[in-house]
Image: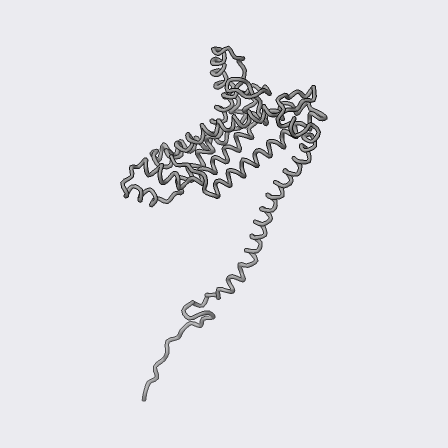
Amino acid sequence: MSRRRRKPNRPRTSGPAGAGPSARPVGAVRRAGAPVERAMHGLFLLCGLLAVAAVLFMAVYMVASGGPVIAKVGPGPFLLGQTWDPERAQFGILPMILASLAATLGAVLVALPAGILSAVFLAKLAPPRIAAALRALIDLLAGIPSVVYGLLGALLIAPAIFRLQTVLGLPTRGSLLAAILLLVIMILPTIISVSESAIRSVPAPYEDAALALGSTRLQSLFKVTVPAARSGIAAGAVLGTGRAIGEAMAVIMVAGNAAILPELLKPVRLLTASIPLEWAYSGGLHREALYGIGLTLFVFIMIINIVLNHMIKKGGVSLDV
């Protein structure tokens, strides 16, 4: 008698061969995850629309509040006038505009190179323990309230400049130099933190290739790594610039708050300082003029952000050392 060979029992599968009994078609998995994906897409879209709506609301509100006073006083007298005297209805803010631009530009010119060098040291040169300690200290400095910086500036920076003003026969009040130095200290943590993250994200083969071609360690850092991270470094510069031009309480305590054309060792008043200084007792046209200052500051910040972001996207920011 011939024996029939039994075929081995194979598990029944509902999918492709070899997929196993629990396998499901790819289409079924996609259909199961589709509602979650649609819900998350809708949530992200809602958040983006809310952010855009908030910016548009702020823009419309500032134009509606500050535009009428600029039309009453006149764009020329308001933006180019050199006298700020609410009692005589004179609302020229040119000295404040120039002081804000000078303080911001001076702070960024000092803080940006120092921030980049500090970021390179933390990311590439410092021992791990020292880098970790310094990183924690920098994060702590970034979270200190601005009024605390202003207090330290009034106690430490301003008296040192007072002695210099006394030697030169100038009034011993606040000064543009004190505001610049204080803003440098305030924006350095932001620039260092963002720049270090950008430098650390550069792939290691970039630097290794430069070293293999005969470059020294410093040459590879400043000719390869730092230029490769320039978009992140420029983003740090944008954030630092925004904080510098929008700072109010700290500069009030060291700048002297005199609405005159800016000089390095003389008191100045920035655009941001006028609003908190005079808001409590303002009214009528004076209150509207403060809205006009807010609109001017808003426009300046928007222009600076648009220009810097355009430079970043086009790759026109050169940070080669």
